[in-house]
Length: 257
Image (cartoon, rainbow, N blue to C red; front, top):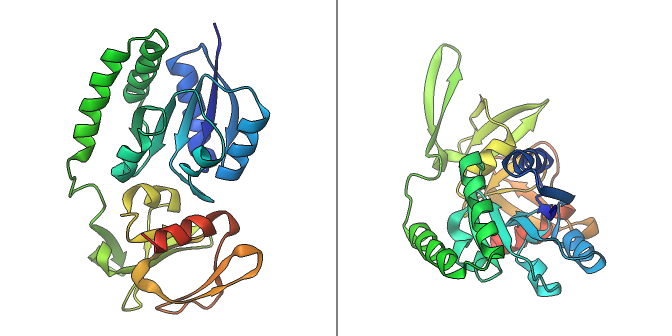
């Protein structure tokens, strides 16, 4: 029997990859929609029959996905996907049957789908044991999780830049550069999507498609059109840095943590 699966993920490449992996892991899983925001997910869930399973990214462009549960009743189980394990305990208060850290690995996805199958068969005791074990693991601190330094080249020299030295990352003509608090600039071989998986979310926030800023780099902020926020960064940037409409809500929550 075909099972209806909903993917809620704000990075198109990650959503497409997850859909492909789900199809490989379990051909009976049919992805009925891919959504990318809290507001769009609430609207879809109100207008459609509930899916059998939801894969839900926690950090969406317009805020944390837990906001979905504030506006609509979700009766089906949820498999959370995110780069940040800090939300694990909250996740499992919202129908969570598993919690996959990005980048999602096939063996972990297969195990999550196995748990979902057991849940459907009513093997709640086994699932509860797995959940308890998983949550105990996630409670353990992982000091090595976030990237500590970047190795950069300048001329014929090599330097290791501590992540604490980085003010912000920016895209210039499809290339990624890091700028330090002392206004040194270096090209790095990482996309902003990859940095999203590597940087401590308590210290860095991706404000739009071109900038990933540290809290320490923000000098001033102003309200801007369409609920957006204009930033003044240090070192200064010779252009306006605007928190996009989709990310403004999440940015305010990040500031307020």
